[in-house]
Length: 221
Image 1 (cartoon, helix red, strand yellow):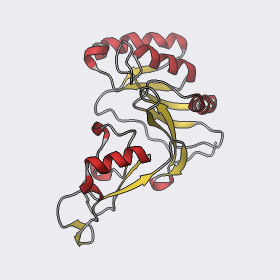
Image 2: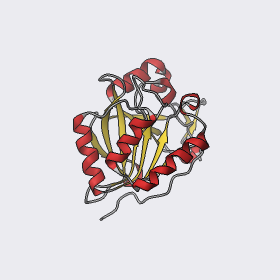
Image 3: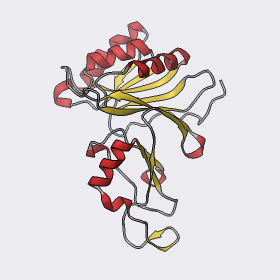
């Protein structure tokens, strides 16, 4: 339910990822990203930075977004709403253009319930070190970009995404950002991916409207 959505993580400055919720009396929507991305948002949507004008508490004078922007570095740990830990980390999205990945939740031993990387062509060495350490402690759900069968300058291919899953070995992996014309029929590709179970890997293509399992904000494990 979008009325309950409180935070948007903005991975990079591609306009298709910019989103917000209309004010509904529950406080501002928080949009989190790095300086380069938020500067681009300011250029593309300057009205989003305007001071909110309320008729009364929780009721905007006109139907605009009620947003709070939070700038983070490319590699940072913070807490979201309800104390949910978030680790932000950089990945390459073509050349050395930085897109952000996100690790949600937290365990004392270093694992994560959810790691999400929506736009990636390669992993910088320092990020790979972080991911390998997280994987050693356990990643429950790993979501990663897999655009097409063939190579692409700004996105991982299906084989590249599977290669990263093989390296990190999460409990479950969902592939996202697919070009349906370039990757193949959804059901047929999922049937193909089921063969990875022989390697102890649970990998499938994600789908629109998919609901993810709930996990506690923090686990003292």
